[in-house]
Each structure stands twice: as structure tokens, then as C-alpha cells.
Amino acid sequence: MEEQLQEKAVLVGLNITTNVKKIDDIDINESMAELKELVKAAGAEVLASVIQNKPARDAAYFIGKGKVEEIRDYCHMLGATMIVFNDELSGAHMRNIEDVTGLKVIDRTALILDIFAQRALSKEGKLQVELAQLKYRLPRLYGMGGQMSRTGAGIGTRGPGEQKLEVDKRHILNRAADIRKELREVKQNRETQRVQRLKSNIPIVALVGYTNAGKSTLLNELIKTHKDYETEKEVFVKDMLFATLDVTLRKATLPNKRDFLVVDTVGFVSKLPHDLVEAFKATLEEVKYADLILHVIDATNSSFELQKQTTESVLKELGADDKKTIIVYNKIDRLELDIYPRNREDRIYISAKKGINMDILLKMIENALMEDTYQVKLLLPYDKGNIFSRIKEKYNVDSFEYVENGTQLEVSLDEEDYNVYKEYIIEE
Ligand SMILES: Nc1nc2c(ncn2[C@@H]2O[C@H](COP(=O)(O)OP(=O)(O)OP(=O)(O)O)[C@@H](O)[C@H]2O)c(=O)[nH]1
Ligand SMILES: [Mg+2]
Image 1: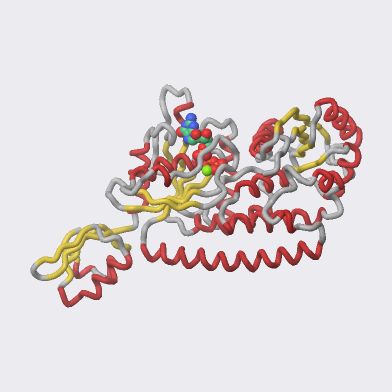
Image 2: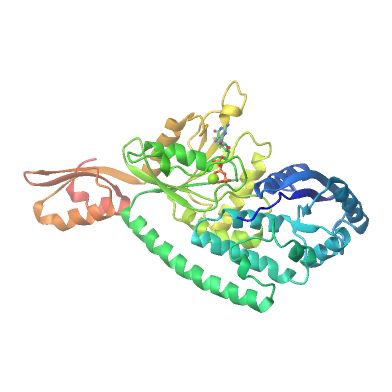
């Protein structure tokens, strides 16, 4: 691999100072703190952070020409190699600011795209990131100035297929069309797998939530319940934004010995570039097919309410907001509380890392998954062998035994089958 010097960034945030405050406006300081984490996640060093208060954005220079010049001097003094803006910039803004500063200019969107490009592992993930990058670059072709091509490497310039990418509109459009076609094929594949999974009738539990909430840690804890558990099945955990980018499925077991699948998903972040939301909707589609959602929240984060809202609004966009959900407040080992809030039917306080309250959570998952099923014992006469095979194909049969007048089996049926096979039930 090519040796690369770590980039040094100065962060710039615009705080629009109006009298009208929206309730869901994220606090500028928190937003900048998150930007800092994003820059670190992309692999750069943060030298300083500047906030410009202004009643409106400047048409040509976003934060105003005077401020840009001031930042230029500041950057040169500190030895910065790039400037990262907290908001999405137009091509013209970028070009103008690069012209004045002579430094590479990156916005929040490009930064997130860059992290995603570094982390995506699956073929689908990579294709989706590349598509989002192309969509981002297209309207900025004449904006992303010389600094980008001069540097030729580093944050904002890398990505899957980067070598093939010439800054040429026609080329970009062709590549985008190819990717869309490839994505359709990958999607087809995934759908086939999903149909197989749905047929196997193993319930699916999806972990969703803000990035760094502890979803992957929780998955690693949940899968320890499975008989085939081995440490190699654990997923990547890191104190870093966007540690997980690909959807991962693993098996776990409920206290009643039934298996279920756990799905780990990409974390959400505020101001997620819209193209990326679109792109990752496909991966997050798994969530739509889940029987239960565990919404994981970092209870130690000062803006967890906002993070919760962000996640909820993406779930809504996905059409998954009416799913059965358990809110999982995580990291309670770091909360200095004398009394933990009481767990409720749809809410629990845990520590995934320390394994606190995992037994209660598993019981809650079991209750939620078993809510709409009927645990029964059936006696199928030997001439009803076809029913037995139908049930075996659709369900995880708990136990069966050949007795004198037929096959006796224990199984949890859904409501429809419960009514269909009612006459064979010998015990409920
Ligand atoms: N103290 C404490 N730390 C935790 C707990 N659960 C997770 N963490 C830490 O939080 C950080 C993020 O955990 P992950 O499991 O990677 O979070 P994630 O939600 O999968 O994050 P993304 O994949 O980036 O969306 C790691 O450093 C974990 O060790 C917990 O219960 N207590
Ligand atoms: Mg993760």
C-alpha cells in the first residue's frame, strides 16, 4: 500500500442565527463534536474547530469571504492540509473557498461518503457507496477544484472504482447505469436468500440505532446463547462512528431453546446525506422483514433523545415504524445512577458490554416473538403424513415422537395454522 501522510483538518461550522428556532435543531456544538468524530473515523487529525455565527449563508463563500480569508491564515499557521465543513456545500462554494485558501475543501457529505467507501465490505455495500459518490460528484464536476485533483489522494477522493473514475460526465452517467444494473442483480440474490429464510420460519430480530450505540456489541452478546457459538462469529466492534456498514445475520437462541436470527445494521447519523439514505435503504430493507426491532440507544450520550428521533425518522422512511419494537437503553454501566429506571414491556436498560440485564432482555425478546404464536401438542394420524411434512417445512418442530396412533409433535403455530390444524391439537 501507498504510504500516506495523515491529513490535518480544520473544521468549520456555520451557525445560522435566526430568531426562529426549530425544536429539532441540533445544537451547533454537539454537531461539531460529531463532525470531529467523523473526521477521526475517516482517519484524519483534527487541529481546530471554528464556528461562524451568521443570520444566513453567504451566496458565494458560504461563511463569507472575510471569514474564509481568516480561516486560510489560521490553517496556514497550524499547518492544516484540509478544511472540513459541517454542511453540504455546492460546487461553486467549494471552488471559491479552495481558490481563496489553496487547500482541499471537504463537506460533511463527502466525509461520510469517504468513511463508507473505506468500510463497506459486501459487494452490495460497495456498489451503493460508489453510486452515492457518483451522484454527489455529478453536480459538482465543475466545482471540485484543482486542489482535489492535485492532491489526488486522501479523504474525499478515494472510493471503490476510484482509479476508473475520470472526471467526465458521460463516463459517470455510464458507470451509474452499470452500477444500478449490478445492484438489481445483487438485490435479486438477496431476495432469494430472504425468501428461503422466511420459509424456514426462524424469527428475525433487527438491531437498529444511532452509530456507536452498541448494536454490534449487543449482537456479540446475544449470539453467545447459540450452541454453535464461537468467537469467530463475532462482529467488529469499535469506539468509532460507522464501525458497521454491512448487514450481518447471526443465529442466537431464546431461553425456550428456540433459535432466532439477529441482524446487525449500519448506524444512523444526523444529516446523513440523502443519497446515502436512499442507497442504504436497500440494505436496511432487512429491517422491514424483521419480526422485532431492538432500537439500541447509548444512554450515556448527552443528545440521545435527538439520536433516538433521527433513528425513528429513518425507520419511518423505511416503512418500518409500525414494527414491534423494544427500546434498549445501553451502556448503563457508565451511568452513575442509584436507582435504574424500571424496565417496562417495551423498554429496558442494559449494558451489552458488561452483560447486565441480558437475561431480562432475552425473555422480553422471547415474549415479543412468541406473542402471536400458539404453542401446541399435536397428534397426527399416520395417514396424515403430508400435514407432518408441511409443518416440518414451515416450522422449527420442538420435538416429535412416533406413538401408537400417529405422530405426536410439539410446535408453535401461527394463528392461521392454529385454526387449520385445530382438530389435531391434544394439548395447548
Ligand atoms: N461502557 C460501555 N461501552 C459499551 C457498551 N456497549 C458498547 N460499548 C462500546 O461502545 C462502542 C461502540 O460499540 P459498537 O457495538 O461498535 O456500536 P455500534 O452501534 O455497532 O456502532 P456502529 O457500527 O458504528 O453503528 C465500543 O467502544 C463498545 O465497546 C456498554 O454496555 N457499556
Ligand atoms: Mg456496529
